[in-house]
Image (cartoon, rainbow, N blue to C red):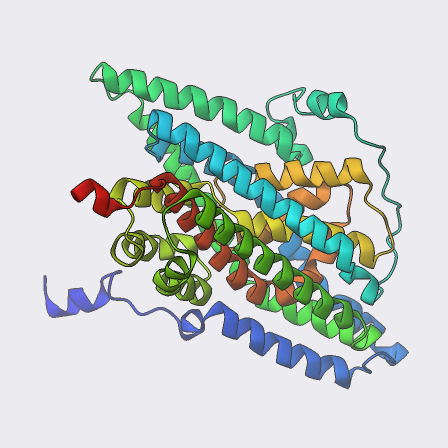
Length: 429
């Protein structure tokens, strides 16, 4: 290859300058510009002549939310299928892994709901009331079971019904995984085209999602500028309370992990924290548990001292299913918005939030900004207006990093529990 050809190859072609700016920095810049524009437009006392301009500022946020709602259901469907088709899960250890992941995720959601119900961050400020009231009855287990079975295969995709969608995805995922195992046992490769198609679909939806995520700074700019111009800084008072509540809940979830490590494994919790420092910092800085995965796998073996099998099951296999921090965040977001708009989610609706958050987190660990995407499904499940997600986008860039670190801590906890009560040194003795 000539020197000219090598310079023009796709691998060496430089990205545009705006793509080289980290998304976090783009959002911070958008926030600063939006606050300045909001102040210039009146900061709570806007000039009537600017009303049309102020209303139009919200258009980017509305478009981003529409795109996220459209992508959420197909993304979860192909993510679950892709995870089932490509992840190697051994029998007995796999069942124990599934129980640990489900337990941790359920605990995370319950902690989030507990903190949100006790601190009630949404009552620290007010927003405009929605046009329609949220309706819902009490706990109806048979109703939930009945609603989990779709009337038609494609209906959940149209209705954004995450529980029905996950039922379909799990059924097809389990069947396809079984067919793949049978084909492998017979020395055949007939499953490969299906796996390739699912992989291509997953990659395609992820790429489209990345286009939408690239527009998030514009959505943040528009919604913050509009909010500051119309209502000043009062709405952000409750957002500060929400950040505090989420951080408290994540801290409690971390304590839950350390308690489980102390009780269920040979690992010392302090050694666990010190050994995992590199993984936690990488997760916080990159906001990606997938990118952090190799580092998590390494520190579990070299610094914590776990067996390779335990480290791989928790950090490599479990990470494809574990999204505890995100599930906690979604449940708290639903309760927060219901509080901030003066509505009430009863016990039955909070149970739906729990189930939807659990199901929406399946296979979402490798999806960029997974919480932002699947939150639309959680809100829809209890009839909350998804328009308010745009306001949460303004703080999501920070909370996403915090909950990603908790996701990684959850992976490490599962590995430690799988390692058992006897250290690796006893095997070598």
